[in-house]
Amino acid sequence: MIYTSLAEKDILDLLYQFETGTLPKSAWTHEAHLIVAIAYNVLYGRITALDRARINIRRYNEAVGTPNTDHGGYHETITCFWIWLADCFLQAQEDQSIETVCNTFMRSRYTDKQLPLRYYSAALLFSTAARMALVEPDISPLYITDVTTEK
Image (cartoon, rainbow, N blue to C red; front, side, top):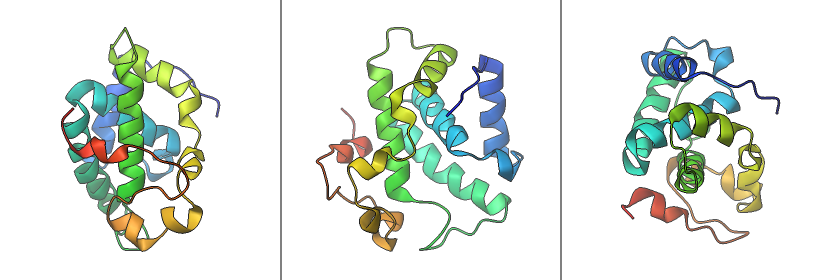
């Protein structure tokens, strides 16, 4: 993935457009999802980041005509995975400014779209059960259940 650094204003603008449903559907990319995940962790902490992601992804999908169903739209396990991973990354950073953390994360090895498949089989990850609720990985252990509770 080729990533162009964003200024704090650009990050906050992306969040605003996402939250208001005005972000063009074509701009709601894997990269944009990850920017939201890391920015939400910086701004709100992991628990609130996850709550906001859950609400706002569903709301955004509805705004752009993407139904949230058991086979499309919002995906709970994938959302939890990326919020958890972004939080783990954030905890290891000395400079926690939104611009620095976001740009450092987006240039890291942790943004690979296939990363969840190191822990989950495709059959499990793309199942209705995983879309509707957080499921435990079936390939490699991941302490992702901690994403929903305080440390």
